[in-house]
Length: 327
Ligand code: COA
Image (tube, rainbow, N blue to C red; front, side):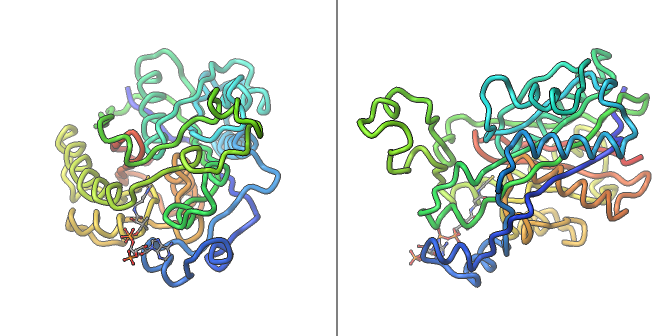
């Protein structure tokens, strides 16, 4: 039993901040950001929330799939930046979409989140537990970004992407995923729901930023990604006995254009097989792969019988890849 992606959707805020806008906040330049990351602008929430973006992306995916909200058995939201902790974002999406028959929960695995959420839903579907799943990656990273740190604030953006999955009788491709908790300090963020923050005399919200915003060793993350992503793609191909030449598209998490280029080079593949939209959105963590997938789908780039690999990597550290044949 395998799964069929029968609809995709995405939502990104209309408010856009280009690199010149970032250069007003920190000591950087449009040229530096473009050359080192490939990012030209990012969409930033302006009234939207992680839940509202997730709901809209989910609604669009269901409409395109021709699936009624009541048919959905499982809603899985991958996020590290939800505006709600309780109830979970997936339950809030359920409420918004009136998907009254769904079981709902969130998954937190940062930039590998969509791949892991897809795998989780696929396993439920393949196991016959559910028949129809709505898998969403949604992030408001602007809320977690230290806008005074030029090493991180240049990279991130907000948005959501979604896919509707149904069980079908085709061959099931198996994913490969890894985690390495020992290296977690390379990309970290402390919860603000912490007594040490709350008891500060000025009250919550008056800490100076630092550890309560995203902290990153950019070089370490870069080196990890360019080594581990090609490895996990090769492992995935081997595990499924599929030749690399059979893959039409490599959908990588959009973290840095140079990471994508380096992975393509290490795999000996042309950049044409690696769609990139980081110039428009920056790094939207677990939303980046489903936004990219939806854009490709809407543009008619995905043809029946084409094989694609989705590969995510990021905080944890975590990384993984999944193979899918488009129908
Ligand atoms: N603007 C201008 N100069 C900057 C800068 C900025 N925004 N950020 C850093 N610099 C400077 C540094 O101070 C340093 O100057 P120095 O040589 O005088 O000391 C120089 O540029 C090089 O800094 P470095 O940190 O080595 O740059 P880099 O080439 O590693 O690029 C990142 C930095 C963050 C763009 C890059 O490491 C990266 O993208 N890493 C991966 C991050 C990632 O993908 N995270 C999410 C994973 S899911």
